[in-house]
Image (cartoon, rainbow, N blue to C red; front, side, top):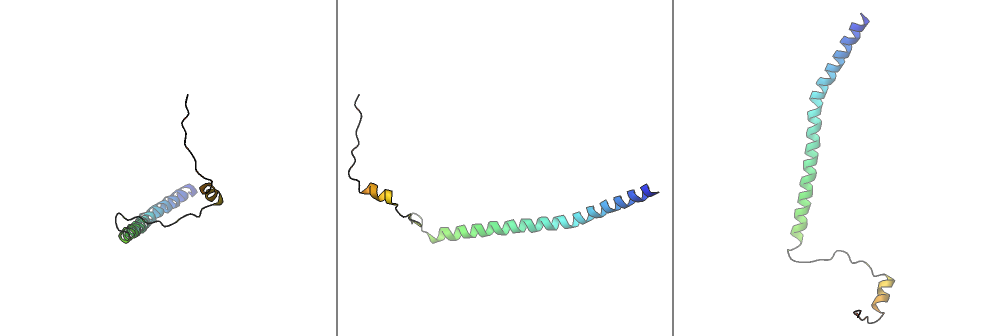
Length: 87
């Protein structure tokens, strides 16, 4: 008798879980898809705004790294002559 009661309760619990998943999973997927769609749309909008700010064919430099001491010393080192090795 206990085995039949255990099987009945376990089948009932599994059926309830299945029904709950059928109801909740589509809502969860819909939220995930809408969130991804919003992120993609925001990224597209920001890209469009960025492209509209700069005219086509113009170059602008956003960041110029500072020169370090070695680079400044190489600029003042003098003239360098290229040579070809003769065999």
